[in-house]
Image 1 (cartoon, rainbow, N blue to C red):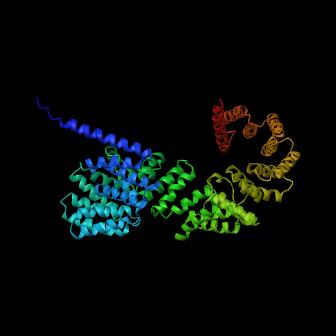
Image 2 (image 1 turned 45 degrees about the horizontal axis):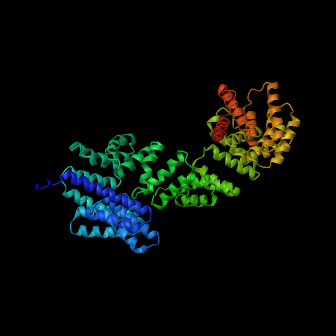
Image 3 (image 1 turned 90 degrees about the horizontal axis):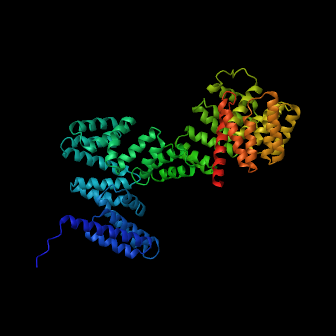
Length: 583
């Protein structure tokens, strides 16, 4: 009998690869079925073939953790087994992201262990081994200053022993670590002149350009590196940071979200993710989660507590917001965002004198902020100090370029307060608008325009609707031929759910507008659309909104209310989507 030829080496490799895939698949199935012993058995079989298989090591570590969490075995022993595997992964790859995250979670003081190992390697002049352990310690530690100095000394020693251009490269990294980006960029440029093919030289030159705030230039150097190695966490972080600085929120998020789950850059990445999410219009709860993670992961950005406070204000979590703003102000008593935030919280909670103090502190460093000047003026009105209020309102008009042609110093107080009322209503600051409207009406109780305007403010705010109805009726009795006054009455009736009366009033308002030649009827038609939507007459509301928006598009000069148009478009979009679901 002839002997069989030995199997080709390529066939043997293919067989080994196939067996590996089968074992990983079987382990995955067992894990999904919570059959932890079988999953462990498959993965350990695979590791006997290749003890350095990173994927198998990581999956086995995860399996030990899940087994311990299930309560079916000794959790402390399984935790230690899992930790041991993550340590092995770090020995093989000091930048293994998931191993770093899990070691840090399972053993928060683990960085001290690697610091001790680094000391032993340093004393025996095993510089490269020491560098590995120092870098693991650096990435596991929240306070990297402890190891930064030792890394600096080690880098100098490595530089002294290295030939060029490696020596210059080490010194450039040292410059970068110690906050000298211009010197670092010059050294990395020297390295590139010596050998332009070295990816690591190009990478660190791009990082140095970022630190020099030459963002567009840095992007040109880093993007090709990312294309060739998308897994490099340094490059991903810095490209995400560049895009963040350039205000390209969505691509910045795509780069930073994965980094926010890793260590070393976790804190700063999470901070930028939180801000980018907010800027991209994502719900504040999600953005807030990342900003709070940034604090817990060691971000030292001094503006971070104020950023968190601003999000908490948006979520109406006033006491938590106040605590964040106070922490921010404690670090910097003149921090504008802290003083503004504390003023907003105090204002919301009805502590008028306190809010004025905070707003005045803000104005000490930002004296030309129209919105805050108006808030301060409203605060003085609440404290029954109309002259002080008028002074602040005049300052607001002087500071706002929109009112460049208005003689702020010479107009009468009544005209001044009317302008401020309209500004507040246009910006939907209804509560403050009501304060100004009440003051105007108190000065001239028989003024039908003041009655009408206050009634509209109460209706928009959904407050004291009975009083709003009374004021609207009185305004119409005084000026029966004013379609705007009839619109206000109809809107109050809509808000009070008096839909039959409201429809008749709004129809009458439109008829009167046609009679007197009033072209701008967008607000009347919008109120009628809301009436139809409130009565669940969705198609009538959609038709009314379409007509309203088309009218505003056709005659923008006549329909000068962009806020109303945005509101109408938003309502139309919502109603249209609801109708599609029904159809």
